[in-house]
Image (cartoon, rainbow over all chains, first blue to last red; front, side):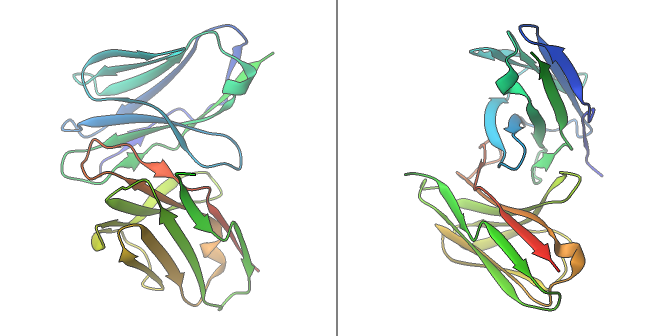
Length: 110
Length: 113
C-alpha cells in the first residue's frame, strides 16, 4: 500500500519565525510532489510543486525534496497569521494515482 | 472567471434519497476528478476521467456513479444515500500527465439526516 505520511499537528509557530512542514512517502518511484494549503471550510489550494531533488523557492515558500530519503518538506519564512491552515502533501507515484497525506495543521501565534 | 465550479455548495437530504452533484471547469483541462473528504479531513480520490473516459475507479460503492458528458464536465450521482456518505465532495481538474497539479472546486458539503 503506497502511503504519504504527515504529522497531524497542530504545529504552533510564532509570527515571523520559520514554519517547517514535513512529509514522507513510501513509493520510491514517485515522480511529482505537491503542497496544498486548505483553510477551514475551504478547498485545497496549490502553493508549490517540485519534481527534482533539491530546493525550489517561491516567495516566502521553499519546497525541499530528497528522493533518496523519500521526504519532501515545505518551509514558510516570516510566518504570518494568514498562513494558519492545514497543509496537505500530495505525491504522484509512478503509474499510479495521486495520494494525499492527512495534512498538518499549522497555527501561527500572533 | 476561469475556475472549477461545482453545484450545489450544500446538500442536506434524507437517508435513502438519490442526489447529484455537478462540476464544470473552463481551464481547458483534460482530466477531472472526484474526491471525498471525511470528517477527519482525509482527502481520498474516488474517480478520475480523462477526456470523458474513466481512468480511475477506486473502491467506491456502486451507488456512486460518475458521468462525463464532455471533458469540461464531470457529474456525480449517488443512489440510496447512507449516513456514512456525509462528507465534503471536491471536484478537481488538471492537464493530462502525472506531474500536473490539480485545481479544486469549492466543494459540496453533503449532510445525510
